[in-house]
Image 1 (cartoon, rainbow, N blue to C red):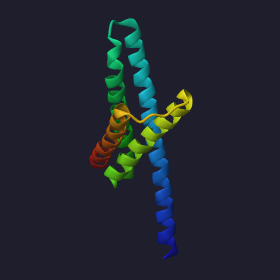
Image 2 (image 1 turned 45 degrees about the vertical axis):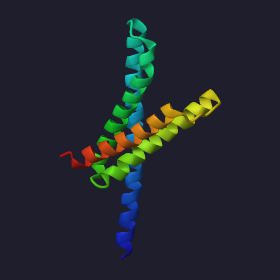
Image 3 (image 1 turned 30 degrees about the horizontal axis):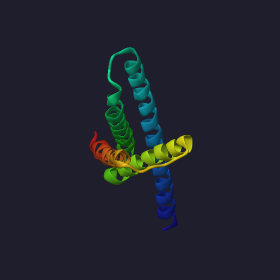
Length: 132
């Protein structure tokens, strides 16, 4: 009986590490895509009004990819694990941005980002669990 409990604890801690890896993967993808977008924005005539929608899209794609990769190795609870990855990612982004900008405001753009993050994580979780 004790062995089953220890196995579950090891499995849960392993899943936490995998979820953390998913968040790190999402952050890396975000930084790479934002760097590419910054270069494109600098050297082309693309209007700066595209920044908001592109950042939302990049965030969604990054979370989708990170949660998909992570849940493919967990193989269960894709919606829950993907949603956690999306939520924690968004919380980290808002925490770091509020520290750097010395202010935190919740507006419609913030709400859209939170929703995109959670939904992209959940979809990525579904895709990752069902990926063979």
